[in-house]
Length: 198
Image (cartoon, rainbow, N blue to C red; front, side, top):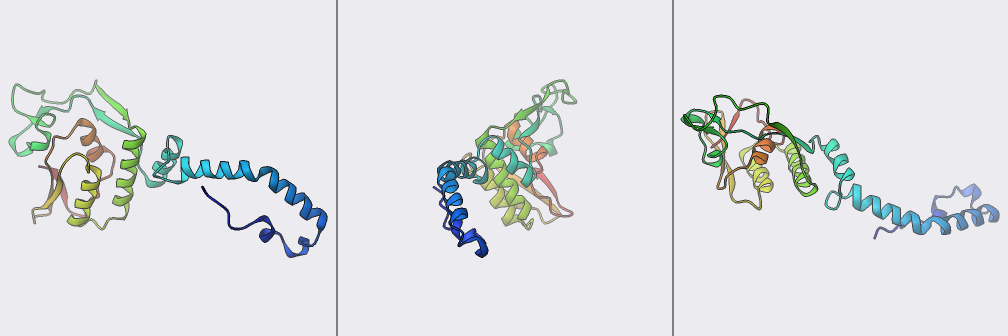
């Protein structure tokens, strides 16, 4: 529990410190509200201030500070006709597909907004915070995607040494994963470097 190390007497101006009436009034007021104030401060700390325990509105506040939304634009039909150059093992079921498997252009009628739950949103906020302070190097991006997908499997970045980097995953990405990578602006974009899924 949070505790205050400074009492009200330390905050009182010197010219009023010797007034018995004023000191008595402040002492009684402090005693009356101290317990409820301490509980309110603790509740504020747990539900809003501490990112590890914040929920609901508290996480929404953190999201605005960090610059990432709880709402993700997710396409329900993300399989589409593509070419072999676009194929990636991580997106084999939801990425570019061969002829007679997926439509030429993804349907826009089933596009929707997905609202992340608190635990997923907390992870996205922390990842975006890392992205905000990253230097854009391959080791930094490796740490970022490893943190983002820490419970899913191995994820890593490969520098192709031609102003492109590839994101590799040992697991299949879901539509939510793709939305996070593509629409949430969580991935840092090094200047002059393109990023692709491989």
